[in-house]
Length: 447
Ligand code: EPZ
Image (cartoon, rainbow, N blue to C red):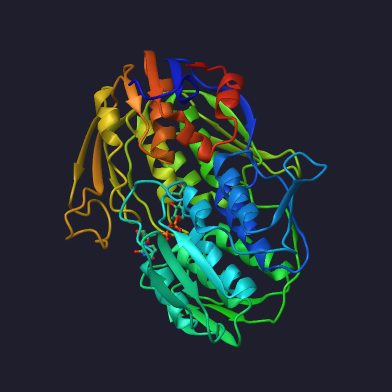
């Protein structure tokens, strides 16, 4: 493990329960999209409670490349975006961001509206499946955009402007729904989107767009109707809290037999997680005091119970909650079953848990739930976890953001000293996680 600098390696002396409190801020998967939405406004936008994470830095860089002035406001976590001078960015400079994030694809609609053309580099993001963008491209074409693939990425133009369309997604993709919202709000006429994603982060993005002057109706059965408007203004917005980070710390409390109060976590966005948390034998308590409230997660003692779970689109159990929770399931008595139905390759990280003493077997079949898109396609997307297992320390290399956090939880739960390589990936989505770990009594140090 020679090619990691000291700031990218965390030494974890495990075996100590996490105890204490921390605070989560605005949801990464809303904040980054709201930042892109600011490009659509004719006046500045203001976003509060923005976490200091790497993905925010990446989107800030992309906004600045396109002429948006990004400044800090007076409050901690307040960012102001001034889009008065939106301009085309140098293709090579945008390409510097290729591989670091999937957000560039969402600039298509806003840049087409503002400049008449957009360039999108080859996309990166977590390595958890094929992560195609065919739904995005198809939708952009139906709005009237012309998409040309070049060596460096995609050139997109709209020679005849963008017009509303009747669209139906083959699967309720979060990113494709956001693409369609960010394009339809200023397209001419009405867009009707069927089979839309309705995650809380999507609804919060709709709130942002409504503040900007967009007219969006969310109907029943995943139908969203957008009436295009000629212009939008800036917004002032306080994002929903990060329910993925909150659940990650909840799972960490359970796996380490600890007790963690996650200030800022909101029950309404986490009901499915809380149901499973209780079924496994974890305990939680909601404090809904305005401003100071949150959710306390703890291990009440005794043994955890095996469960069968299946990830799904909202309101199902989030795919991003799966990896942290599986670490806790290694401590449950019996056979737990996990069926991952959102990403086809999101169980690879279990090999590292096995290396630490867990007993997890992955399967190509759809186990424990309804058959999914991946069932007959040769993807290892189900797992059986036999527990409880005593975890021991190991050297671990982080494969992606959420799997990385689960490696970290496993190292915290294990006896002995582990070294976790590639922790900068965790900084993509978890603000100051080393500081938070220290505050919870974990024995960790960088290097
Ligand atoms: C978002 O990814 C999140 N990322 C993911 O979180 C999250 O896991 C995911 O939604 C599901 O909730 C961000 O918000 C930045 P999708 P996204 O489009 O939008 C298939 C994290 O760690 N699909 O809903 O890229 C796709 O392959 C990240 O914070 C197509 O086939 O996810 C997948 O199987 C990881 N064609 C499924 O849809 C397309 O054009 C869902 O993907 C688009 C998607």
